[in-house]
Length: 307
Image (cartoon, rainbow, N blue to C red; front, side):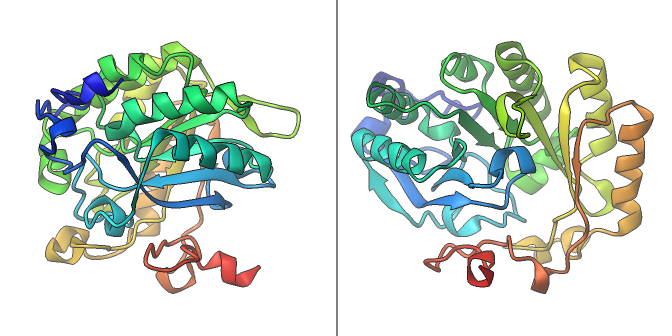
């Protein structure tokens, strides 16, 4: 699969650089997958984390440059270590051995070839638990097609319903078209979310919607798209967890947490459209949010200190 890196067009940036020869494009990624952290993560949605945790692999680098990114230490500052395909496969098998419900690939878009190679190795060695593709949503439909039969659960963000907002706050062009086309492809591959008798996700699509201050992401318009182009039955995670991170304070409109009224307005619109499957969040002050990451710490999340 390394041939895909010779003229990289894995994401809509279409940089066409030869990552095998040390060239780098928008994401600054090379030929070897870079991983920051591997853990049993208990901070995802209930059917993903379950009771034993989600086997989460946090990749470094990203094809978006969100000015409010809470994972900026790895997405923009690129901390992490290079992993071979066999090492990555070994981590997947180790997470399965620990009892994790799934393998949760965070920011995987630019590492699709490496993931496919690692999955093939791990599968031959007994990997059986579901693969979760956890993405910011700036995808190419053609790249998502490469993952058919590999990914069991797609968990994309829909950050914006406006291309101008996506370019201003995340540095990406034509986000809406590419995001929606890829999500329609994800839904074609895996359908709606399927839970087992214990409420653990086995297959399907779960869409994340982060409410930004002033609803500048246009979540209500996104909800209209989900109802009209996908299904009323799609599972949603409507998130209230926004806090100003990274460079957000340089943008006055992003420099504060969201208001309860802004969040409730989105939830109310979802209910009005009949989009009732999924999860909402209670607002948590930043100092009490145990799920805010610090990738410079060995224990990335504060909740590990509470258990």
